[in-house]
Length: 286
Image 1 (cartoon, one colour):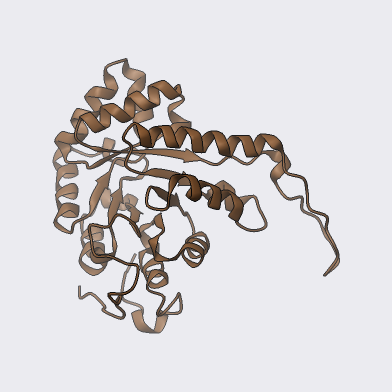
Image 2 (tube, rainbow, N blue to C red):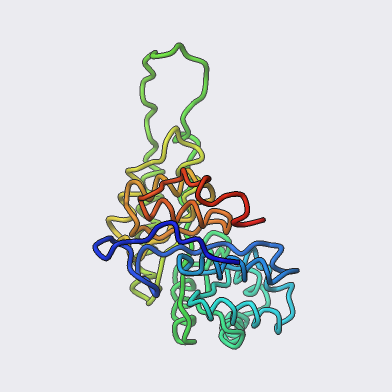
């Protein structure tokens, strides 16, 4: 499959070559890559230049033979794509105190580059979280704690029918919501101090329950943690577009594999999302 070279970044743009410290695009692996390696191979061969990382979906690697996992990881590495475990550590720690250390060693043996730690799913104390970060780093892998911004009920805009142009008074924001964001940032800062390489922020709740993306929350997180150390999970193209338009190509995004083309066009700022005529109907047959 030939790669379409419909645009490129100029040297004076904010888009460095791989390996990148910012402007990182990490993609979720397609579930059906469990049955066909050709899917990932097609993505890497056609868009590998614009994919920085691959994350296994929902512990999918736990269902695969080790030889198959290594084959997929080797394929990614051949295209300078790092590989992340995704959310799976929470299932490992139930096996006992030493289980997480064994998990880190197994991930290193298989060739994984990054271990993701979903803070909400793990259900552990902050001290234990920091210990896990240090264990990952001492094992020679990168640590990526995953935090979720939770929206309290009082922060969800109320629906209802209203006349066009009618004034709607702003709903008050709860103090608990502000404290929750501050607590998230403080915990993320401690993770970075402990050696974490990147902080993943799930942006779904921020955009899902509001009339528009809570720009103040995102700005606060980026202002404290830094753009280079923060990655936002964007489950839909509208969210990706919002981040890129506001923060430019330097923003780090975790996206679905089917959104790679759209996101890269947005990063390029040359074609935007109106590129159907360029790609044609045969670019990706997913």
